[in-house]
Structures are given as structure tokens and as C-alpha cells.
Figure 1 (cartoon, rainbow, N blue to C red):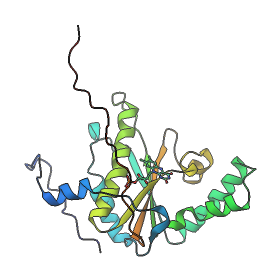
Figure 2 (cartoon, rainbow, N blue to C red):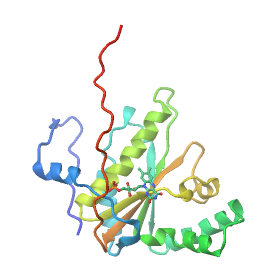
Figure 3 (spheres, rainbow, N blue to C red):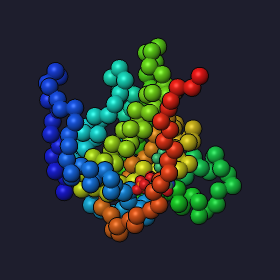
Figure 4 (cartoon, rainbow, N blue to C red):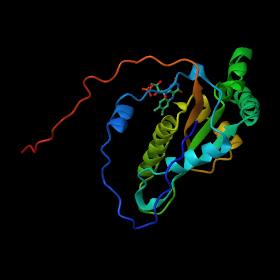
Length: 210
Ligand SMILES: Cc1cc2nc3c(=O)[nH]c(=O)nc-3n(C[C@H](O)[C@H](O)[C@H](O)COP(=O)(O)O)c2cc1C
């Protein structure tokens, strides 16, 4: 299902700073995440996913630090992660019952392909960590967009597995690294409905005051 993405031109090539397109406007204005309970097979093949991830990294990134990385879960790796996560949960939340542990084992089974986006800020003594973490957030969103554009349904979830030191250890995160989110990708078995959208986000046109 994935159509190919153009490869990036060589460094220094003149690039358009705008890209007017009704199709792109429709896509952005009507974008919708898939419902996490309705993402099934097929998902992207490993080759399609690699292409998707390469296109996804075209995000704003101050000083080109690439302060992020991906961890991909496909096939039985999803189940193995679930087992490891349940063991972490038993340690971190001993009160968790059988049902909660079963839920944990099934977390990554909710989609054929799951990509953890890892915020991996670099210490260059110049670029604030906050900026680098924002870039990781942009990467998560861009993965949703590129996946949608390639024909895949997607959803950005965090849940407790994004905020656990035990899970960070299972995934081999280094000091300072954090999970920005798990992006679930596949084919929607049921289209989501529109949900309420912001109607009155505060927009202040700043004027200087004395
Ligand atoms: C950082 C982040 C974490 C999220 N984590 C969850 C989550 O753990 N569970 C959940 O149901 N939705 C979560 N969401 C919300 C969904 O990804 C999605 O945005 C929401 O269902 C609305 O759909 P929409 O993207 O079409 O507006 C999260 C969103 C963001 C930005």
C-alpha cells in the first residue's frame, strides 16, 4: 500500500519554501488518529517502514543534532516486550492484578507495527534540551502524517510504559533519554468518528504596553 517517498535532493539544492496543494490542505485539516482498539493487519513491511521512517525525520531540528531515535516492534518482538513489561509492572506496581498484567502483555499487540520514538537530547552546550524534546514531539507527529499519507492508520499513545524507569531499562535507554511516544501503525478496521475540535484556542495579538 505504501507509495514511495521522493529521496532528498543533494545538500544545497534550491528548495521551494512553500508547497500550495489543495490535497495537502484537505489532508491536514481533516487528519484523524485511528482508534487504538481498531488497528489491525496489514501493517507496513519492514522495507516500507524503513522508507517511512526516513521520510519522517525531515522535521525541524536546531543545529541538526538528530536528538531522537526509533525502536521498532514487529512480529513476536511485540509479545516479548509485553512479557518484559508485565515483569516490570509486577516489580513497580505489586498491587497490579492479573487483568492489568494481561493488558500490559497485550499492549503492543494492538497493531502490527509499533514504533517507539525516543527523545535523545545531545549536550552541545548550546541547544536547550527543551528544544530537542520538542523536535522529538514533531517527529512523532510527522510519523503519523507520513504514515497516513502512505495509506496507514496510526495513533500516538504513551500510557504508563512511557514513564517507567523499568521499561526504559528494558529498552536500553541511556541517561537523559525519554520515550516520546509509541506510534501504533496498521490498517483501521473501523473508521474513527470526528471528535470535538478546539473552537476558541486563545489567540492574542500582542501589542506593546507602556
Ligand atoms: C503525547 C501524547 C500522548 C498520548 N497518549 C495517549 C494515550 O496514552 N492514550 C490515549 O488514548 N490517547 C493518547 N493520546 C491521544 C491520541 O494520540 C489522539 O491524539 C487522540 O485520540 C485524538 O485523536 P486525533 O489525533 O485525531 O485528534 C496522546 C496524544 C499525545 C500528543
